[in-house]
Amino acid sequence: MATAPKKIKRSSASLTGGFVVGFAVIALVLLITAQLGIWQTSTRWIVSLILGGVLGAWVRIADL
Amino acid sequence: MNDPAPQPSTMPKRQAAFREDFRGRIARFYSGPLHVLMIFGIGIAVIWYSAQQLNHPRWYAWLIVPVVFLVANLFEWWIHRFVMHRPIKGFNNFFMAIYTRHTLAHHQFFTDHEPTVDSNRDFRIVFFPPYALVTFILMAIPPTWILISVGLPNIGWILMMTSVFLYLNYEFFHYSCHVKDDRLARRIPFINTIRRHHIAHHDVHIMMEKNFNLTYPFADWLFGTSDLNRGILGHLFNGNSTSHVKQKQRKIIGATDDPQAGVARTETSTS
Image (cartoon, rainbow over all chains, first blue to last red; front, top):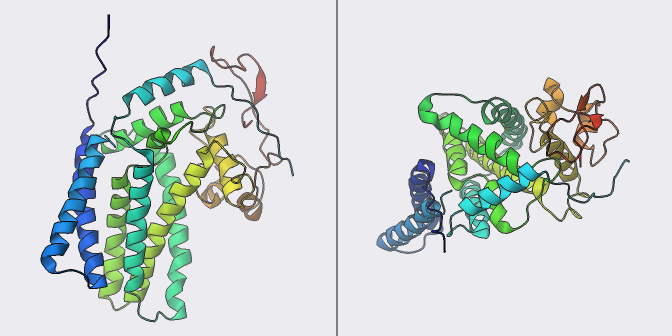
């Protein structure tokens, strides 16, 4: 009989850490793109939100 | 120089069982390379941004670099000795989580018998999570901001650059301690020193008392918590040598799953 796969509860640290990393990446992308003088403000925000969101979410689902 | 040849793995059963259980708990979406890329990507981005803020710094502005080196070395020693190896309750379990992750997981996964990774999924227990780097950056912001506020912006930005560089230095050196293929690590000055130093620290008999530095063993020398009996230059450039390891205590290894159970040995033998 097949056994059910182990369900591992993610740690609360990865949830808080995901938000921390997400916000940090957003801030960094905004600072760096402003420093480089590339893209319009709206584009900077979109890119930073996408990158921050994806990397922050990954920290959570990877349970770091 | 005493440069013993690598020995075959003698992993205790308990360590093997811990590794199997830990690996079974690593999330499916975890990626070792992405973990490392995120840490070094964020770190290098902060260093680059800080470097862009420099405006023809005078020579004395760079004097902050050795100061940050010193403070970071003492901080690394302190947090490793008094937080990562001590169960401290309170603070919403913040410090207990660090203790659990380090003493109860990292030190079970890596022992002086088998201190190396088997695949890049094992990076999960070698590298700190990326939010540790962000926390470290947040800690460096107040002194940076103060220096900028008092009219010393170059010193402030150099402080930030050095702080983040030393964090990346820590992660890289720590990985070098646990890398499987040590052909390079055994030959590079400082890295070979910290590799021997840290693997010795993974001996369960000395891990609470000795060898807390993870970059350069300055604070261990300063506070007498090194397993070596030699001066500061000898500590920094010790390499793989075990010639100067203190030999004052002998212990009987009693763990039933220890391959050397019942055999008398010095407290500081390294694999």
